[in-house]
Image (cartoon, rainbow, N blue to C red):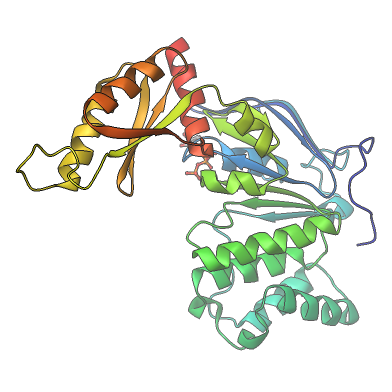
Length: 331
Ligand SMILES: Nc1ncnc2c1ncn2[C@@H]1O[C@H](COP(=O)(O)OP(=O)(O)OP(=O)(O)O)[C@@H](O)[C@H]1O
Ligand SMILES: [Mg+2]
């Protein structure tokens, strides 16, 4: 692909404007809007049932929206135009390869489906096998690949026609951390060449890898922006409480019992009205709090119970939980 990466004035490669979709009683999408430009990786981040797959299926032209506008390279994704079909790569959540065919045979099958010439196939096959590190496994049946390798082969098949836009639905689900890192490195490489990439994920920690993220919940975008900016805008607080010393919270003469200490601290945090969620992080108890006076109050209660308390940096999960809690409170 020779197109250069982003320039601010460039038309978006993908545009979703107030997309809505209902399945029976379920409003899967409600006024979902976002845009994606060449060279950009946009992450649609949200838990199960948030509406990620529905959004991607609409943008890939698999289903129609009930309302709103979906536009890919300036056209409706529902068009059957061959030029648009080959410019749009879609990797569904459950991508089906031919399990009894080898890596090589799967690639050849999809190359035929995309009507690649022999020369085009030879050149792209070599590059895709190299960047996906599947070269040593060309003879292996797809069914015998690991989860991560299977996803990479699926990606290689989707990339055969050299799409300008790549839509990937949870590509890292069920993939081990090493392969996950490799897959992300591959996405960065493709984006650097000018490809626009929309990736959905339920893993909050993957939000930080995207150029921009949209946090989606109940078919709506709750927050959107550059990951670092979103974290800067976090309004609540995260307290981390751990037992103060070797004796912990145990009274003099008692044996230290870290689990019991943590349990006691977690109970104090859970009871506090400012608390949104608590979790255990190693030897410490982590409490996510709404902004306000409660933060100092809970800190004092935990310290009174003998804990050492520190303010911790928020994660995307904290941000997500704190924003959804806000919405629930208004409902
Ligand atoms: N074909 C369908 N028929 C009925 N309900 C559907 C259909 N597709 C999606 N839904 C519902 O719409 C909502 C959004 O589903 P969607 O699959 O888009 O979520 P998701 O974010 O992709 O979730 P997951 O992380 O589990 O893949 C869910 O409540 C789901 O049950
Ligand atoms: Mg899904």
